[in-house]
Length: 401
Ligand code: CTP
Image (cartoon, rainbow, N blue to C red; front, side, top):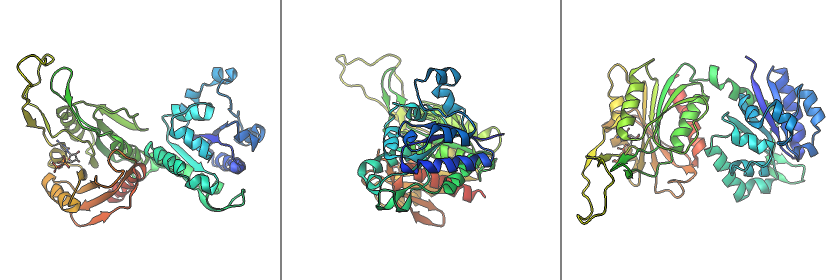
């Protein structure tokens, strides 16, 4: 089937390279639907873009003709991939903050498709703390990046910030488009658990934790991008379902246990199980049927009982054990020793350990991880959570080859 790219062209001297990119894509049989931002139109004309794309150029959110033909929601849904080239500092900033004040940013906010950005800006803008933050946020939201290059710039300066050549963006687009059917994990089945669980005390109160679910959702999305058939069993989160991922929503650890074992025991056998969820270790033994009142009896006593270990249960399945079982661990000290002990105790193949004492890791955008297997330990360089997800997916693909 013909692949379709929605190409957002931002404003910058490098916008002319979007024309060559469009030509390369059309030559490869990829349909291109361009969105030209207002500032983009200062650098390339709608006419040349439309001639190369062989179709209409979209630019104005409030153009009534566009809305009747195709609204911005439809625009973002009808593509296999959304590409932003050049992605200016301003476009990245607006996208990172969910601002939707023109057709391009509204489309980026409305899309449920993978997004690839090719940044282009002055070297100082690229290295500014604000752009660093926006980049980390976008990566954590699952956006992929190609470039920028280092070199001489139109503004006369030298350094990173230059748009990569159209050929390089083209390669990245083709890779992303092929991700599904011919990716390294095509035909492989994955289970990912993510998010916190909630253990009820009474009809209004729960015991839970601060897991956002972002790392697990990131891994589920990254596995799907490589072609895996991914089922995500998720506790309560505020996150959108990653593209191409099947999601089962649960609330309690008991429900997560049941759903995960059901996924593991039915259908094609799992190739990989990745257990990222922050499962509550304990739940209240008795759930009060009515809301507990302060009354005069003093504070209630809540007796806790231990929840079943989902990771250990799946790892100990005889015939239906996934080929690769990956657990997570949050540690504050003796990270490697604790990770090794957990690997043995839970019967998994890998433990990905976070050192949560590292600044900015807990609840932050970056992660510093240790990959512990029966035979080896690797310390990964600190990176954005999105980049860590992609690297984990790559390693899983390598291991399952
Ligand atoms: N896990 C699970 N089911 C549980 C508890 C944990 O699947 N009931 C999984 C988590 O998803 C994670 C790993 O086990 O992959 C974490 O193990 P856990 O023993 O909960 O880790 P910590 O809380 O770090 O352990 P400790 O009690 O040693 O601090």
